Image (tube, rainbow, N blue to C red):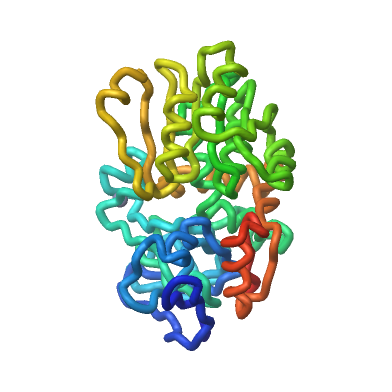
Length: 339
Ligand SMILES: [Zn+2]
């Protein structure tokens, strides 16, 4: 088969690689229904995160189980399944607490920008869709559940979004936009999306944003304060991972409020004493998508949510390099790759 391999900054190649096979008895091999490019793929693509030689890319996936290892019990060939970017046994104490992305057997997925994929810890990682193989029109949304929706949902959950609460979302990438959708599902009263891009503002409103703030940094914070009568927001979702976005999030939150952070931090440094006097709760990390997958799959299958709308560019897998370029240049929110 052929898959996407990153060689260096802006150098993605679609080239021959080994067909995945069962290595551990707990593995499964999937035939993917679709895959996609993640905002986090852009960090190494831009050369902002070093890579150790040619790197197989991709960690978002759903599709049909082709084969399972001898120790796999609940997952069967022929099932349509959705998995997470972090594998988990779903039984260890961290998994039991709902932090499957900190599982003691965790492996971070790679190589999903390809037609076939090996998934370790199959039983604890993969969730079959009830009712068998879903309609192809639902594949983009199910694929979104694998990472961006699961991460946006965790952002809202970790920021303690409550019915009637005031929520701010920092970041208008796919995760931020799906953070808006998630906050709406959790009953937020007011959802302020921080975005400067017209097409993203439009989607944010479609997903439930009630206000748009275009200012950033100190001006952005001042604008949020103005919109909340000088108090700040109850819940702020930081979906970027830069120093500026983190400061914007912390200082837009009211004392006693909650900040979640789900973008991989790059160069973020917090001043302990300044943090002390903000009185905010901080909670983030790689999203435990597995905790939310069954619920998210149900919401997608019954038509309550349509997170697949974040894919505004669809390309065949062999044009993966173009998909990265479009996202890098912010011409696309998120690229879906047809396998
Ligand atoms: Zn575990």
